[in-house]
Length: 314
Image (cartoon, rainbow, N blue to C red):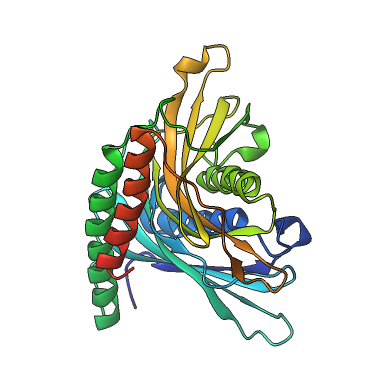
């Protein structure tokens, strides 16, 4: 009998019509919500306390989840720090009548356990009990090295009005329906907002709403976002490939009674979109040419992040 807290949890449900994006399949933002909820369930089960999302690693969407699919989201604690839990989340889906589920995406998500005052608190140590658990832990440690390198590359970038790249900004109030179990905005909801803003930018750039996220990475949560806050989600084009659009998204929030300059950075990430034809094949995207020094720096930054991922075999 294993005396440890459970390391794994699986959520199963049907993808609903309300989960669909503009492509007709389930939106990437909704899948990110599911990932965050399953990760939270695993983290809370392991730690026995409330947890907050700290980081979501590289989410590569290998196939779409269709409306009506049976969806299985499995979250597994694979590594622990003093107060953190590194959790892999696997999403699979398929026809409910056959229950033959195919992988859709996999990622690593990091949660931090907090006490009643919101301070980080220690979690039980995960000691691998099998070779499989040991290999999973090594993989998570390797991902931590990747995360550190990505964050270092991101920290040196400047985003200002000197940039001329296309951008899209959404502003709204965080609603009570966005609340999580701790009374703040759910991390999965923030990731859905990121996906929506990037989708609008990609639509404006290509002139077509037939575009989807194929990758979201480096999602770092810096501070909680509270219900009633004014939220600003800014998506900026960083780089275009033959068929891809690399987009940086900043989420800021604050007291709506304060000025816009008082909004503080809540979350930042990078996401990659592609346009699709009627057969759901990637199509060439209009080329964006950097103009200012800041444009060129961010364009090079997008390529640097691609190189880092490739070096780590991700």
